[in-house]
Image (cartoon, rainbow, N blue to C red; front, side, top):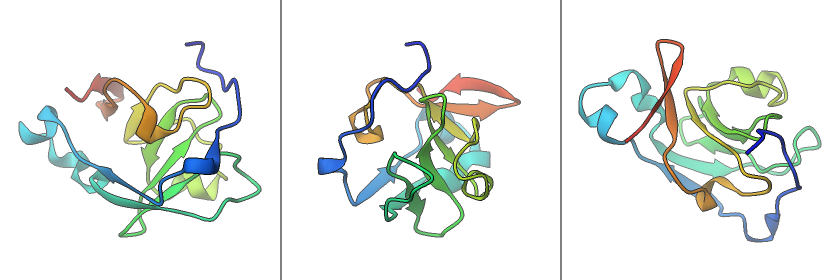
Length: 119
């Protein structure tokens, strides 16, 4: 993976909601990211982003594809920057036009400024 978007996504089958759960690190006491867990609802497609964006039911987190092609779960800052923001609390390496519910492998979480696999 070169970290760059290679294709536009096939949005014909985009799920209306996605559920984020935390892995082993969360269960072991890494609770600083617990607010990322929950249900995310699809937002209407916007001109600033060709990729679907989901918003947490609380309204304080988004799941989006950064320009690097990686998927992120982040706070409201990415929204304020039209999702041109290469960071978040959770990250999954993108793979071309694959949507988050189709990704394989683990997400990573930001711990002390470094990405740590959520095993």
